Length: 328
Image (cartoon, rainbow, N blue to C red; front, side, top):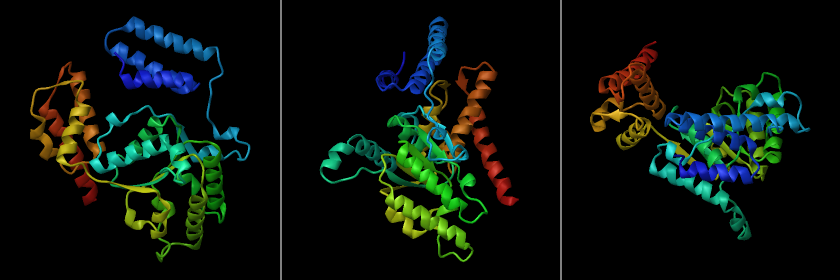
């Protein structure tokens, strides 16, 4: 049976006239029913969705529809409609509470405005790769029923003087016009400390432009930036953000929660507490990959339970790969 959260989201997407989200949720429900062996129902739902798509024009949120932009603006974004909720991510208590606060303030922004207050909408995420920064941005977008726009930093920064700043201007105009969650990943490329000797004048101008755009932005969109190394960022950036979330390698308690979450669809005949030390030092993404690889092996070998040996071996494979990289 579908989760209560899925059913509520399905109903909301219908009344919001959000066809893309409604289709996606419907197909997710169909896939879930198929896993339960309800193949006829799953096929009927899929057929209904397919027929509906043929009989209407599908809504596409596309920056090319905005006349203010030239033909290259689409190249700066990756657009998606994430379908995740808070139960699908393992976070520290601090980060969990901060994300809940971001969601609550957004949903109550009209109340806050009446008292001259603004909701949190400019957020900086900092931490190791694979610790949940990108997934956090996706969950915020999903929980708020907003499109997610991932800005491709490598497409923004060019060797031609003035062009990078012009692209940033286009992006912030898009942020103003099209409400959504805008995610600047690998933000170090723009936000590097202006006092660093190796920074060329053009990049300093780019950072100054970004700071000005960020300062002046009063749109309804959320702006989320992420960095793997906060020490590289210019200190002037920090006061422009409403909140900063710090991500780290998962603790043993978080590792245990993550293992239970990822392995819940299979029988585990061993004590998960006994493998925590072997997973210590791995990122959230590393642990998820290890679980997925272990599940694949169980499926291929027609097993309904998870092998402790296989899981430990997959942990070790990742650690060995990191060791080889560091020695290279």
